[in-house]
Each structure stands twice: as C-alpha cells, then as structure tokens.
Image (cartoon, rainbow, N blue to C red; front, side):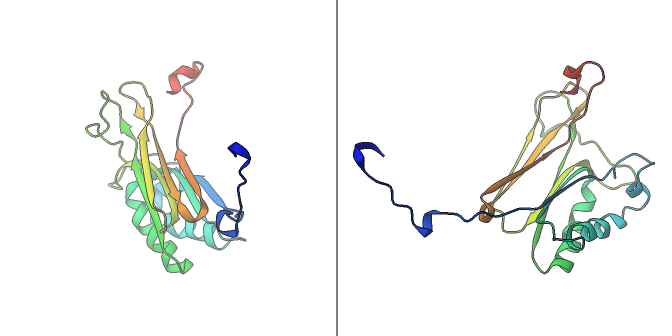
Length: 174
C-alpha cells in the first residue's frame, strides 16, 4: 500500500481453498453410428449420473462434447433426482458457418430427431452467469463454440469447447 498504510486481512476477506472435481467426456452421441449412445440415447442420462455420483467422490461439475440438445433436460432431471441438489445443464449448438452472424447460422443437427449437435456443461444450479461465444472457423464448416459458467461460491469460471484437428495443416482447424 502507498504511503506506508497497511492492509488488514480478516476472515471475511479470505476465501478458503476448495477442490472442485470436474468430469469431461466426449459422449459421441451425435451422428456416428459406431458410438454407444447413438443407438441408446435414453441410457446417456443414467450413465452420466452413475459416473458423476456413484464412482468414488461425487463430481461437482461436468463438461460434455458431441452432445445432442435433447439430452440436456433429461440429464438435469436425472442428476437432481439422485443427488439431492439442484443442477443446471446448459447446451449450446455448433453451427454451420455462413457469414459472421451466429444468430442466423443453421445448427448442426443430431440424427434421429435428437435436436442440435454441440457442447454442454453441468454445474450446480447456484451459478449466476453463463457466456457462449462462437470461435473463428472456416466458412461452411462447423462453427465451434465455447460455453462458460461462473459458479460464484467456487469463485471459478468453468469453460468447455470442442475443437478438431484439420489434418496436415493445423491452420485448417480454425
């Protein structure tokens, strides 16, 4: 502090350390017929719930890629029914890049009427702020997105995105 003033640290100004356990999973649920949840989409919410709540220490949050929009609400309901607390599962679609306006770009779709294809986050329902931003991508390709949630009690911003490698030229990935 300037001028020799001192700063007093009190119990109210110190945030105790907290460990946050986060699960990440590319669920491969969109359009790949070789993936488990392509043929059994109803099993996804139960499987995620078992992975998050029943294996060792319960998971505090989860990050998902290749997720169908129609899975978000069933997953939230499944987590709430078995965890004893509220959850907020948010989904953001990956779009087809046409121009610079994500609001008018069409969503990539999951096969078999399962909604849009994209990414999701599952956090306790206490969060107060969400943000989604579309990332630089080539025209007529998948317009990737980043989704973030701020959980105030954790003093943490948790973010998710799904990127791909464009072959021999890494510039083709974005």
